[in-house]
Length: 298
Image 1 (spheres, rainbow, N blue to C red):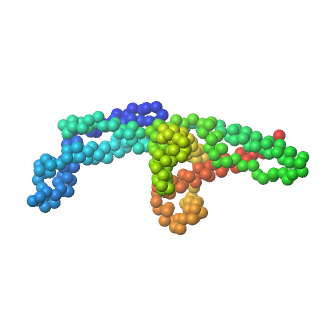
Image 2: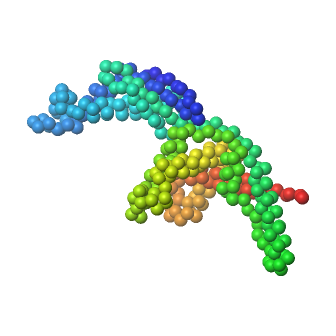
């Protein structure tokens, strides 16, 4: 197997893999053997029909399709491993041609973790807080004149304001393939939700006065923003060495009404997902505390 790597813009890589013809034939022989085992022919016990007969009667395009799938399943992960590529998206696969007598070539385009440049987002948050305090002081001045009760509640920054400040002052380019994938997920979630209340996608779009393209474009923008937040906050979590313990994960599950949180911890994927959410929440809380806790002498 040979692999050629092309670096494309926006943290995207195109991997072109060539599998020698003898390996293609080997895989075809394996797929044919499996077909023989699972085929029933009149006059033969299951799996006992002659290979030639099975090959003759089989749907060639189906057999070739199986061979291609097996080759991709074997050589795509191998090419990633050998070239130390860690994709963050599913691959977009292109196959030039398939012929048992020729080398098999396929190209897989994937997104990889983007480079991140964190900017100085704290001044923006301080400005926001100061503006809010100034507005409050003015409003309370008006209330005092009228003899009304003043508002002395604590002024807070929100999580979304922190996320926006980080995104707007930092640099990260998200691969189109990743945005498409996330937008697809959002579209299919919407279709499921609409169906659960008896609406078709067409009826939903009509109610929202939008075309499918407009909705798709909206979702792409939301997807890009949430992916930017994901990578930027992830980097800040790493830089700040923010850790979340198993106890904190159990607490979060318990607070969410989970009956057996210890059992949930055993699922690595779910545990990783909850952990990454809690880490980002912890990070945002620390940023808010730091900005709100600073003494401003004016």
